[in-house]
Length: 592
Ligand SMILES: [Zn+2]
Picture 1 (spheres, rainbow, N blue to C red):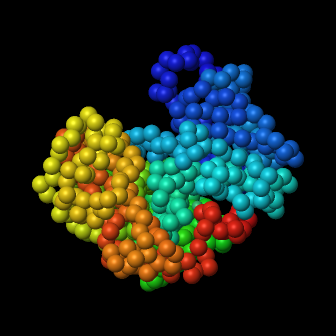
Picture 2: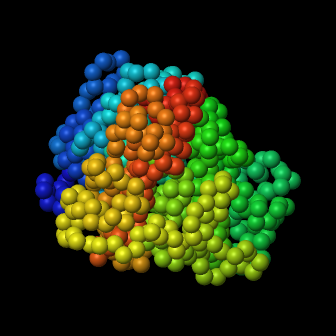
Picture 3: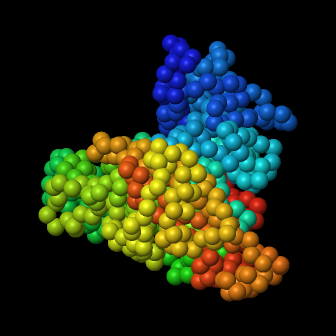
């Protein structure tokens, strides 16, 4: 059993344990497809409740949650991996497995953030996030509740089963909601009462991407998807344009141009056909996850020119999700051009999973490069590129070495991301100017490095000592700053070297009378007072020098006027999310 040989207190935090979870949900095959996630081994009380998670499971028909032990012998230090019953009805009624699945997926999601960002991430509510895994609330109320700071998963009737289906058995839903909770703890002002809709949409886009790409990162699932896709195409016959499965069948396993050309082009449009298979694999998965019952539009669609004004945060975020997934498909296809890249479906699936993981890492790392207030899509693109630039100075393509004759010029991860954001009309500065330090040369550093990495006061001193930075931020000299957090982050780059930086963020909120708002910022306000805010994210390198800045100036008339106009327009829209992230009927059709 898992607890055997485990000494309390010894090596705690370093041990990992593999736990079985549903790869996607309860209806993917009989028995349902499983995946394995590796989570930190910790002391887990009946609940299950650990240091960071407090999962509660109510049994069907009961009002109160009943504590469930994850260790078979009931000890607090042990977690035993138990596979779910093969029978669907038994699976749906198995509270023990539901507890394990929710605990493991939530822990895995949190860990994906912590591992990638190189630091611990707290919840808005404190150390533990409460998750009601089988709540009595209506299934449509499933989601992260920022007021109560907990996640609720409802359950619902489904034609395919006699028992009610717990929504928490959908792996992507758990990952999506836990991501909301992570983001809310990390940057509470992205989606608070004063936030603009882009902040809510950013929440949705990141939550969707983390959910999709974490499901996609299991090669078994990708392999199965490609198989299903290939079967569907074969069934449609050889004349539907593309009738192969991307695998190099002819002439052995080597991708020597002739065979892959034949594989990619057999009866079809070559490169294009190859990409179509991958696209339908990935986008089919994405659609399966998020448009069950066609509640949400398919992701693979034309981009409306005014998508940035869409009043619904999910619809706005989906366009960005689409751009990132398109980048995954492009990079995936490039990886298949590696020698032997198409040798087997397993190989193709591995490549897809690998690219998916890499791109998810880029998105998650970007969070620490976004400003603490009013993030925009341009900020997101810049953050993705700037954070990747630190990790990978050279923008290497997925398969830098050999290349088939006639294959298109290989492109690096950043170049592909830029291209796909360009498709949705989002662009940013060239690599050399991503650091945001154009107007910030010659700063003074009257600070102690040891304090700078941990003490908000030291960051405050640094800002105060640099009028140039204060001007760039348009700070109000009479109002104090709030330095939210200062954290050292340590990550291992792919070259094996450690990238160590200090990340600090600060916010200034200035209370203005109606007259001050008019005279200083040209704002017309309704009440007697208004609060305007701005903030910045500063990153310092190992030597304590500022190496990156994302600033949202405070007393900048132009910015505040534009912001006020956007806020006014959004207030007049009916779909504004006030309380939660999810419209009441958003998941109406899930999972029918
Ligand atoms: Zn959401």
